[in-house]
Length: 374
Image 1 (tube, rainbow, N blue to C red):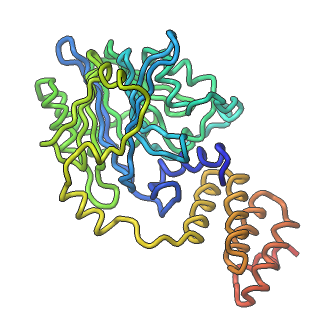
Image 2 (image 1 turned 180 degrees about the vertical axis):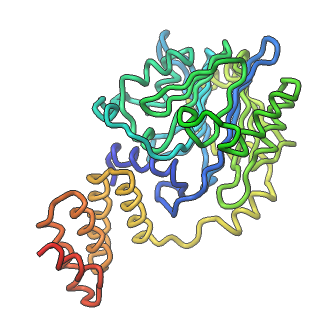
Image 3 (image 1 turned 90 degrees about the vertical axis):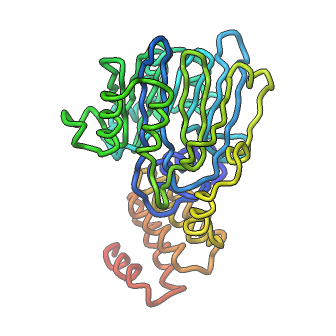
């Protein structure tokens, strides 16, 4: 459970399914919206982060060498000192945003090596590249769990944009680019695929391109409910300015001048601490906020989320931790048996189903699986 690989795998599953900090809950509807457009000589990119958790951080990474670009990221801490970014902007004007997409065939991509840098892959892609095309080229050498059910959008100060869906890359063909939670490569009728995509496209077609239009788009496409819009960003890629809004309140804005912020050094802050208290956040927390944690159930859900993403070894590790922490729970052993069954290890699957039956002779699933494994 403490290994970097398991945490990154969990982060990728978390981004797709929606979850509390580190541990997964039930899958939720995706609703993020992103765009890039030109306004005279200025290029704007932005998006809504519609997510099940509100525990976001913002962190700054100054360039460590002459070959790097200082960057700011918004995301969450996976474990002490290890972060997973949802949004980012660097001093070259390169922008990144992550989107849920649904599963896809990554047979060839899985043959590539995992990234083994000191930072997370989606941190280093901003720290080491200056344009959307350079970012796509950099990412092309690695596999990442994120791509199993997600995709990465990049835009730069020239107005170019590209989304890496996995093995497929879709590039912008004009000055406007819109992305929501479906793969552009899989449809020739994007306006019919998603209402938020249609609204954003129509507003870009009919409105004067400006910072105000960007803010209006995010306001009109923000989400409510459990996956409410927790924060929104608009980035001036030409001047490396980031405008941040919290809990879809577009009256209060935190304006971040990247060059000036990086002079303060490497640091991280809770995103909510940049804003006044929001009634929207209070209402959301009362209805959807974390309740008294049930660690056994949460670890179990994490294990099944990993199984659902074909991360069988990681799932075995999660379920094993659960049996060590809750050895008297028949359900932890039942889940571990299922993971080994999926892995193809029938002997261990039978062993753990038998353990589950010892603790709960009325376990119908365990009895059924043991009969199948005979």
